[in-house]
Amino acid sequence: MCGIVGYKGKREAYKIILDSLKTLEYRGYDSWGVAVIGNPSISVVKEVGMISDADSLINNTKITKGTTGVGHTRWATHGNVTEANSHPHLSTDGKIAVVHNGIIENYQSLRGELKKKGYVFKSDTDSEVIPYLIEDFLKSETGISFEDAFRKTLYLLEGTYAIVAIDKDSETMLCVRKDSPIVIGVGDGEYFIASDAPAFIEHTKNVIFLENDELVAFNGDMKIIDLVTGKKLSKKPQVIDWDVEQAKKGEFKHYMLKEISEQKETINKAIHQDNKVIQDIADAINESYGTFFIASGSSYHAALSASYTFSRIAKKHINVVDASEFPNYEHFLTPQTLMITVSQSGETADVLDAVKVAKKKGVKIISIVNVMGSSLMRNSNYSLLMNVGPEICVLSTKSYTSQLSILTLLAYASVGKLDEGKALLKCVANHVGELTDPKVLLDTVEVASYLKDKEHLYVIGRGQSYPTALEAALKIKEVSYIHAEGFAGGSLKHGPIALIEKGTPCIVFAPNDETKKEVLSNAMEIKSRGGYIIGVSDMDNEIFDYFIKVPDVGHASPICDIIPIQVLSYYLAILRGCNPDRPRNLAKSVTVK
Ligand code: G6P
Image 1 (cartoon, rainbow, N blue to C red):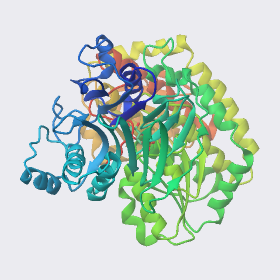
Image 2: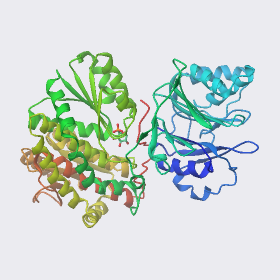
Image 3: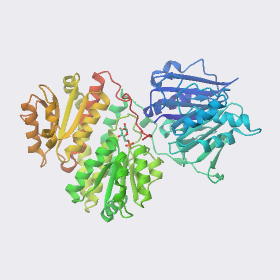
Image 4: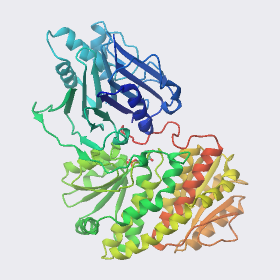
């Protein structure tokens, strides 16, 4: 979590950093801050709240002009949401400014040592030790450079970090990564640093992906050093295939609606994945002695849904485990096991941790990931890029359906029917185009208006629709803050039915498959107790109080079924005055465990 940026070049840093931070806001939006090297000192601005609300600060008078600076947008881990806890943190002499993403696990002992030396802490963060340690090395070792003081500081830090530091005296900018993301943009005589490339693709698409323990010094030119061997490295920039417009809202009011509307196109991108690559992964699944799908959040729901598709189409059992629970499965891993990780960001800490556990047992790792150069991609034996472009809204929408599409293709390919899978998805993409038509989207406002003041809402589905019910409930609760729970229709009678009162809304997924009859019986049980039934189905039914029509696309139905609920979630957020792109307490990339 948290987004960090750095800029060193010939243009005014403040404006560039502000714009970059706005793009990275999905990584955390509790507070933000910018520091720029100016004359006579480094100037700093920090604010609690979202940077997107800070347009009036573009011409901030507190910030002096300068061409080197750092910025940070925070998702609080250590310390409350206050200005003092916001980054950048300065050294006591004000000559060094630091932004940090990650967690310094031994910060308490480092703080203790620094306090003994007379350093007075202004914040409760783990990060504040970093500028003080650098300062301490500079003061106590004659002739030591900023770079060496930084390097010595890194040797003392335990935990995860992406750090950018600037020094007033040498006008140098430094950055490093260890298990937290950081990428470098190489422009014409200027350098950009960010947690994620969309922050600077407006300026350059030439990107250098750093490995752990690589330190980069910017002072006129750029020098990359391997901290383990001490050797200078030469790394060529890669060109990132993302469009500037993809990272902008365009005519849409929110990224969430824009990304929901892009799904026809992103499913088509899934269809155009290289046949050989899909087939090779499907063959690896067939050849493995046990396959695990590992993911978190919506990606986990996509993986769970796909396990039903594999069961139906390929009669193949896939173990699906929430990444945070995966370490409990390590005893069942052998070098013949295959792990397929599914992650939009490729930076989710629980997923990366699961990979570490699996690697120790010799497991082969294949990842389905959206962000090129992400930690997951670098830690996998093989990666398949989703190619949905940047997903900026904290909620997963186009990533979810892309993951479902790619996994569906894998299921078809595993029984030699890749072409059939592609033909089915073509049909899905066309239906998704209809479901996301601007006029159809607005139809959902009616049911959203009915639900907007409800406190609780339940969602049921059976078989392949069970993961869809979990995902639907997650979408609704995370963006509208209505308490929503998804259940397997069959588990209703084992407890949840006690929650049904007169008027309790319940969304029922009733696709045209083997589950239809039974899920309609479950709906009837809810209705008999006063529940209000919102049916999502290919056909209306007298049990439904409100009907949402979705197409019958066979095994690929979960892809279409979730879309009206994504739209419903969006309008619930709007009607309840919530920001759909920035739900409270959440972050898009969960880089802490
Ligand atoms: C966070 C996001 C979710 C996302 C999950 C997994 O919780 O808010 O939208 O599904 O992380 O993220 P990943 O990048 O691994 O798919």
